[in-house]
Image 1 (tube, rainbow, N blue to C red):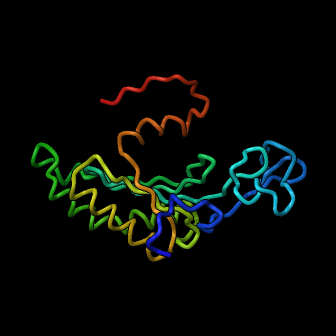
Image 2: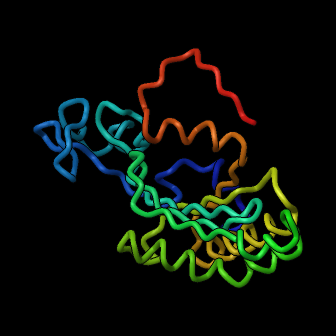
Length: 193
């Protein structure tokens, strides 16, 4: 089953948990949810978890970013709650050269990625076993740096048999605005420099 695409399979077949609202319209965590609680067993909305009226997918996402000269890992809950965000800058490594040296950046990622991921998990108060989805920057960026993050994330996803989602670095800059401002109205215009 490891060879199949995680995206092609529905979430309930990938082992993702469903968080259903209580009869009083609140979720497992006591926050208000839409609708009036969970549907009965066997209902299509409960199985799929796609209906925001009753159920949402409760995921913990470990995101890894190594596109250039910073090693970063974050744990995010599916409802946009950032549980941890750890960033290690390589400014001191590259300063003597007046700019980023791709080979040095890659080597620094190799040295630091295990501890950055562990620190992110520690701050989020979870273990790797709790992660439901691994996300990683797949480009654009420095090839060597991207390979470090991709290889690390692929290894984790393979070992824990969890989905791996590749993230476009530039699109992520735009999407990050929605973490703190979920009510941004459409149509919208974004500028990446």
